[in-house]
Length: 180
Length: 417
Image (cartoon, rainbow over all chains, first blue to last red; front, side, top):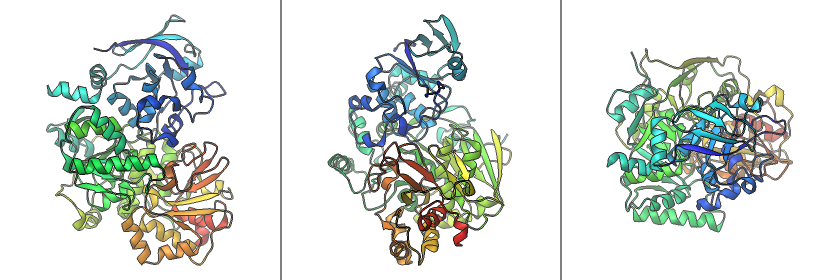
C-alpha cells in the first residue's frame, strides 16, 4: 500500500501578472528537443524548461513538493516525458482544475497522483494557496488543507480505478493483481 | 434508451451493456506506436515479460525522425528493428513509408467498429473510418504489449452538426479551426466527438480525417464520423480484417449537440500559441512569416497537395520565404508525382521532403530560429513546437499556406481561385 495522504510544499505556477497559467501544453512542460531521452532519471532537468518564468524549476523543486497548475494542464501530445519529468524530480502530486485527457491518463497509469481541484483559480486568487505553503491532501476523501494557513479546501477524490492503480504502483502491476 | 457509438463499441469489447462514465476493461484490436517504440521497448523490458502477448495486433511505423537525424535517433530506430525481428511483429513500416496515421489508414488497419489505441495523441484520426481510436502513453502501450488489456472510461459524447456547403477557397481545415476557436481547446476533454451533418457527408475521407485528427486539439478522447458508402468504397480491398459498422442510435443521449453552419465561413487561421486562438483570415492578412509547411498528418494528402499545386502552378514562392512540402506517405507522394503535382510545387520553388512528420514537432528538417514565424498546415502551434521557444506558428489550410507562400505574407486564398 502506498500512502494516501500527501503533504508537501507547493509551487503555484503563476504568470508575470500573478495569475494561474492555463493551457500549459506538453511542449511547454517537456520540449521536443529532449524526446530522444529514454532514461527517466535524465528527464527531470528539462521539466517546465519551455515555460516562461519557470525554467529554473528543476533546480528549485525538492522531493515531495506539490505542483499547482491552471486549467487544462498537459494539453496536447501523448509524450509521457511530460509526466515522467516530474516523477524524475520526485514531485509528490499535481493539482489543477483540469488536465489534458491523455496527460491525466498517463499520470494515472504511471501511478503518479494528479488531482482535480475545480476551485483552484479562486483559491489562488484569494491567496489561500501560495507558493511555499505546506499543504496536505487526502487522495480518497476529497479533503485538502493548507497546513501553513490552517485553511481547508476541497479536491475531487480519485476515481476507484485511479486509486487502485496508484496503490498497485503502475498499470502493469494493477493488471497483474486484477488477473491474479 | 439508445446508445452512442462509444457506448456500443466499448460495450461490445467489454462483453456487457455500458453507459458513459463507466470504466471497462478491454482488449484493443490494434496497438499503434512510432519512433517512441524505443522508449516503450525499454519499459516493456522492465516489466519482466519475455514476449509480446499479441504481436499480430501491433503496428509499428517509423515517422517522427525519418531518416534518423542523429546517432541517438538512429540507435532508437535500430533498437526497434531488432525488437520487431525478435518478437515476430508482422506489421512494421520502416522509414520510407510516411506518417503513422496515413500509413495505418491506407494499409487498412483503420476500420469501422474497431478499437484502436496508439502512442500518439492524433490517434483520434481513425474515427474518420468509424473506429474508436484514442491516444495513450508509453507505459500503457508497454503494458498492453505485455497483457493485451487495459481500462477505459466510457466517454460522454458531444455531437457536432456541420451544416451547409463549403464556400469556394474554404476547406475542412477551416471548418475544424473555426469549431476549435469557438468551443475552446478543452471543450471536449475526455469526451467523444461525433462529426455529423450534411457537410461531413459530402467530405472526402481525407477531409474527414482532418476533423478527427484535430478532435485531439479540443481535448477529445476520440473523434468519429459515421461510415457511409464512401467509407466502404475507400476501404475496398485495403481492409486488413472483416469489420462491422457501429453507429449511434437516433435516441442516444449526447452530452451536447453543437451546431455549426459553414455557409458563409471564410478561411481561418490559428494564431500563436494555442490552437483555439483562431481568427478569420481578414484579421491576420499581411502577417509576415519565414517558413511555410504543407504536409503533416492533418493536411499532407493528395487532395491537399493538389489544392496547393492549383494555386502555385506557374507562380513562384516569394524569395523571402522557404516552403517545405512533405507528402503524408509514400503512396500519396507517388500519386502526386504521377499527377505532375510534385513537379508544379518544385517548379514553384518548394522544397520537397521525404514523407514523415518533418519539422512539425521541431526535431529536424526545418527547425525555426528565435524570432522566426512559420505558417503551417499542421494541427498544433504550441510555443516552441517547431524549434526555438522564441518562434511563432500560425495554422491554416493548404490553400491559405500556398497563397501566402506566393505573397510572402498571410494571404486570402480566395484571391487565387
